[in-house]
Image 1 (tube, protein in one colour):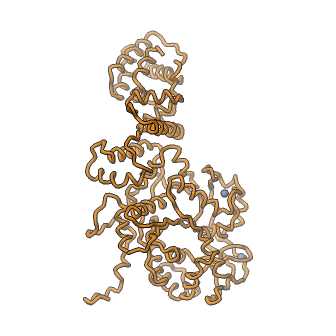
Image 2 (cartoon, rainbow, N blue to C red; image 1 turned 90 degrees about the horizontal axis):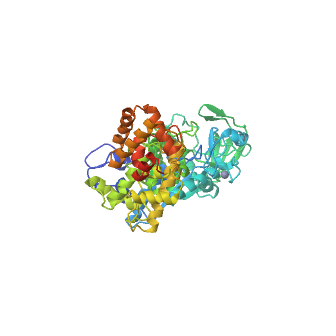
Image 3 (cartoon, rainbow, N blue to C red; image 1 turned 120 degrees about the vertical axis):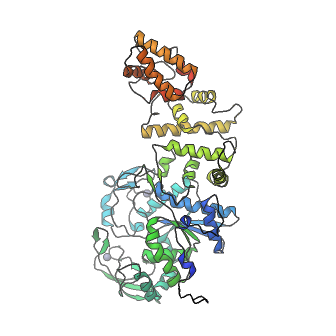
Length: 562
Ligand SMILES: [Zn+2]
Ligand SMILES: [Zn+2]
């Protein structure tokens, strides 16, 4: 209690909101990069080194791009702290002693292919409802367990975006005894634990015991502990039914005894126990935790475990094509898929943006994200006029986003790369890019190679979305065609117009006009264009397309000279 008679007995530090970024304190230094603001708060704890940043995931469903959000958010804070001279560990827990509570409809193999439950050994999963993920056989047969399979994909995803995480298996922390002391402490202070948690969960009554043993008979996690011997480090239990959302997982009725390594703390205690064991200083998490386990978690940390909870940060979830990520609805994308479409640094950039804002990840409009990244890069190197905020953001963030800032790096505009992707010939791609001024004379070989690598990615994008660039430009040979004199005259006029140099929408307009002037049906005239360039009856919006391809070729082709 404070000296001025203030009767509010809530310590000031308890008022920490996880929504920190939405509520920057007036006294705080304003930073261009949100990770610097968070790093200030971590420094205020006077943390011991190494500073520990954590994230975590329960291995259900498909580990998709949304799950990488947490890894990337933690990474930027880690990088900023490293930049300030601290030694930092980024730990990511696989909460793999959690029980499987329902059958996922979709799984993912190690190559990143989504697989329907029906295509794997679903029976083995069904028999293991209620068992810890690490005790369930891998449905694909390639890893030690279902949990291990999931963790492998998470690790691969982190590797793919070049983020060094230490993946920690919760099951291993229990089995090795690392979590035994804190588990015993919680059981020794059961009354306190019950009292705190009952403020958050109605189901906590006087019989509630904060430990869930694994039944030695059926292998399922059970919630009915009948007695505790904290000194001996054992609990007696009865294997009862478990409520799992809209279904009940049957217990086998077995009565037995388990050690503190043969079970788990309920999540509301497990999370704070992880903070204590791993010495966590900062943890970002999604909105679900912000309203659920964070308020109880910080209470448990202070008033049961007697530790200071980490600096929290809520990040907004993002949507995919305007819809929430959902592996069962098929609205997911994996990191490995994304990296077939854009460079890792572009993806890293996406996660460098303000985490307190909801955003959409749109494959359809991936060109906008890539353009934004290119602009960040150009701002960093002072190649464009950016306003003060944008410039400050670029200067601070860009070095964390790329492996190494190199001024001579070349980026082909993404949609231009997609146009180049319409042709297979690598020499021709390079020739057009040079002729169109996207590759300067004297550019170093590595920069040219790097620039042209984007063409394959943009082509994958065109194929995946079936967009206006998903066509094969018949470049080397003119397709067979047979036009009447009017059509030939209209084509010649269009060629002249393009040769004069015009904007995309002007070219589009001229296609209509040239057809009309020569009494050619407009639809047929577009058809003639698609025939000449793609050997097809249809294609992309022709005016903007012709504007993107090198003019000399377009003019020659319209004149049917090559
Ligand atoms: Zn596997
Ligand atoms: Zn049982």
